[in-house]
Image 1: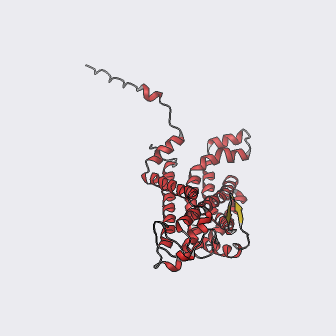
Image 2: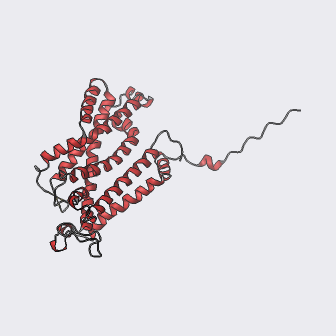
Image 3: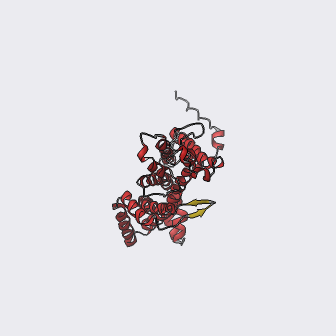
Length: 315
C-alpha cells in the first residue's frame, strides 16, 4: 500500500507580506549588534556635547585669561581640572581645544577624501598609462614617512600664515597649515582602496550595460561605481578622523603643531611636558580626552566595517 504524500507546508502570509529590508536598515541592524560601536557612539556624542555645550558655560576669553597668582593649582571646586603654568583654567581650555582638534580631524579628512577618491577613481576606472602614473606617484608619497614629512612641512610653513578669524573666533594660522599637511599626506591609503574597488566593480554587468547605452563616463564613475564603493570609503574616513587628531597631537607635542594662543589637546600636552610629575592634571585631562575620542572613533569604525560588509548576510 502506497504512503500518502506529505502535506505541503503552509505559507506564512505575514512573512510574504513583509517588505524586504533596505540596505541602510540592514546596515543599522548589524551595527546595533556591535556593542563596542554603540559604546563608541555614546562616548563620541558626550565629547561633542562637552566641546559644544561647554562653550555656552565658559567663554573663550575666560579660557585664555591668565592669572599667575593661581598658576599650577590642582583640581578644585573653582577649577575642576586645575590651572596651568600661567593660571589659565584647564577645563575651559580643553573645551575650546577640543573644538579645534575635532575641526582639524574633520577638515583634514574632507581634504583626504577629495584627493583620495579622485585619484583612486581615475586610476581604477581608466587604467593604462594613467593608472601607472597615478599609482607611482601614490607609492612615492607612501615611501616618505608621514611623521617626518609633517614635521618638515610644519617647520617651514606654520609661521607663514597670519592669524585668521572664523565664526567669531581667532585662530592661529598654523591651524590651516596642519589641516592641509595632514590631508595631503593621508590620501594615498584611501586612493589605493578606491582604486581596488573601481577595478572590481567596473567589470560588473550593470557597468558594461551603462557603457553600451552611451552613459557619460562621469555618470558611470560618480553615480554607478562610487555609490557601490561607499562602504570602505566611510570606514576609512571614520578612522581617518582619529588618525588626524592623533597626528596633530604628535606634532603639537613636539612644538611644531598649532601655535598658542589657540589651544588644542595636543599643544596642551606639549605645555605639560616639564610638569609630568609635579602637575599631573596638566597632561592627564587632555591626554584622557584624546584617548577617549580615538577609542570611540575606532570602535565606531569597527562597527561600520562589519555593518557595511557586503559579504555579511546576518542582521
